[in-house]
Image 1 (spheres, rainbow, N blue to C red):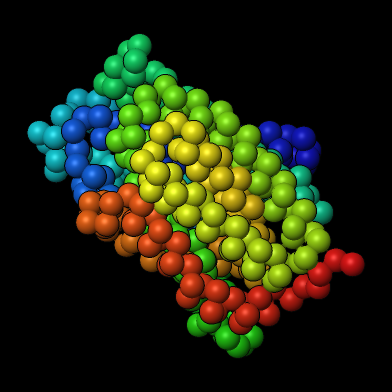
Image 2: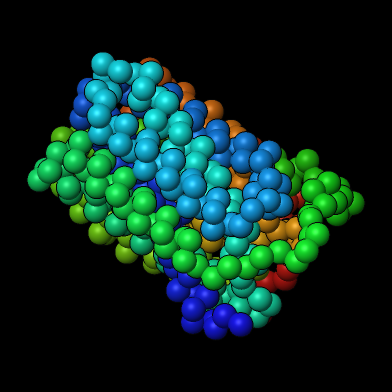
Length: 395
């Protein structure tokens, strides 16, 4: 019997692992590639590789059925380590094909480990333990973004980008060892999940297409804007060390504050109503960056936009995650959650792939404003989606 304290420690380590490649994709590599002379269009186009997260539902039943979760996690981290060593050895402008293959390998391995980590955690956590487990999950993932995002951006000044990628490869192998040492939770003999049955209950509830459309579109403005945030900072003349300080220091605190506010909002209004408020607040980050670009950038406007982005995205993330958790059936949570998060990535990865071209054509101000407009379809579908939340506002 694994104690709750040990479960929380394991979950903390697992979601540090899950956040590790996410931090590289979102915070480190856009800066690395822009400083190396890679064009904004290419940086934006590379976000199409995040389609691995949209397609992970296709192989999630394999992870769910075969082998131990720890082996899938450790294997994925080994692939990530090899890809990081490849990045240390190549020139991103002279060897574009090798660059794309290395980043694609990281995305595929990262998506696979996410499925395994979520499945393992669902198996580990028992009824009544979800509250502290999910709190630890959010805290650990955000900490990973801080350590492996902004924290890593401090290293190249002292050791260079090649040595930084080599150090990250060593870290990936250390995290793989941690995964292998977690408690083993074998499935019962002959246990197999009914993949098709996981979705029959959803179909019977009615309004499935509207709900899936809402999931597809709700975070679209954030995902579309994301690939151009770091290039906007770099082109605005903000040094790498300042990006690390603001995004990973002040931004980290603002995100945690936003998550706390989002939790209070869900408790006060219920999941359905909180989505209206969270969705509206999420637009503030897009409009904030549009305003910063409109006035010509500068430290104060960019810093203010960054804080607004972190605070509002924290609020929106809690509301959206609460919605996803509410509509999942516990007995099918692993496959259903993989399906929902895959759907959430579909439109966002396509918009992100076009973000560099759009920013070059519209300018940063026009681009950031246009991403805010992308929220309108999600609000149209929200009434139907909110009915699936099946909750009442707190008195």
